[in-house]
Amino acid sequence: MTALIRHITVDCADPYALAGFWSEVTGYPRHPEGEPGGEAALLVAPDGEGPGILFVRVPEGKGAKNRLHLDLQPTDCRRDEQIEQLLKLGATLIADHRNADGTGWAVLADIEGNEFCVERSLSERA
Image 1 (tube, rainbow, N blue to C red):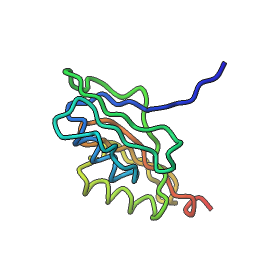
Image 2: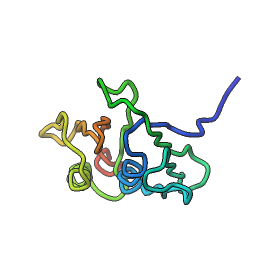
Image 3: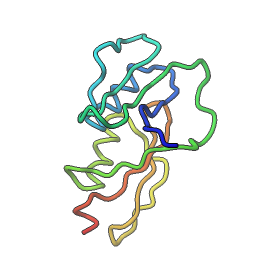
């Protein structure tokens, strides 16, 4: 028995705002039915086939470390450039595991405190 992943769902306080942050990060566009103040906002995979990212309003705030998180790999810049862009969008640096030889990753948090990692790009790994 198998199943496709249709959505990756994130509980949050402000679905529209958090979807905007992640739209900037991933290039996934917002679904046209999403609106400020709504109970949910969906980002659609650009290819129309990958899983969407669904943001759903919940009353409680984030309480502890995420048990599931995204690992990002830059596609059009280097890891450190991606980290700088994310910080400008409002992300915060949680833990820096970058090494002097260029290996490693960084742990950041989005605008609602959800952790994610930024790894090296494919060109940096070559």
